Amino acid sequence: MTSPTKPLETDPTKRFSSRVENYVRFRPGYPKEIITLLKSECGLNPRSIIADIGFGTGKLTELFLENGNAVFGVEPNREMREAGERFLKKFPTFTSLAATAEDTALPDASADFIAAGQAFHWFDRERCRKEFARILKPAGWIVLVWNDRKTETTPFLIAYENLLKTYATDYSKVDHKQIDDDVVREFFGYSPAKRLFRAPRNLILKA
Image (cartoon, rainbow, N blue to C red; front, side, top):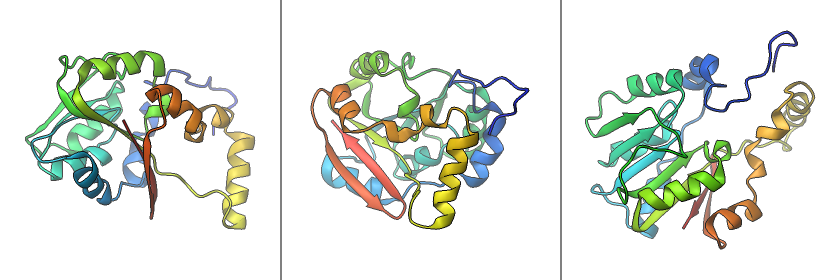
């Protein structure tokens, strides 16, 4: 919710600066089945180089690092990036970059996998598509992941969703559910394969 006396931060690279502690404490992580799927379907192995775009506090990044991967974490928000660096400091194969999805500062054809956890809906899709094409190796993969909160299964969840729609003034604009099949099809240029995990639900789109 936003204060009526405080202007809303519209720059997605800055809007989470005051919310880092809550992200660390309350934002759910991701199931390890993501790694299992990427191994079986996409050839992920410990030698694969990962570019985690918008890595935030490092929850998705951790899965790749635990798999033995070298991960370049790209995060434009200083406070989020520093929290992620503290969380991941025990992993020697992690490199943090102060950069954006549209200008990652990574070399050409340097990543086997580009991953984005709970972040793709903030990107400038036209610009980051060109950037992803530049840094991705031939036959590389793009993996988009979201935790999808249930909104209609109980009276409480229905009421909570209505509360957000009423008082979180930009909720409808930034809701990741706007990334539907049409948006994904336009981004990839065709309909990518999908895998859906149920507990918690994560949508992985690959190309």
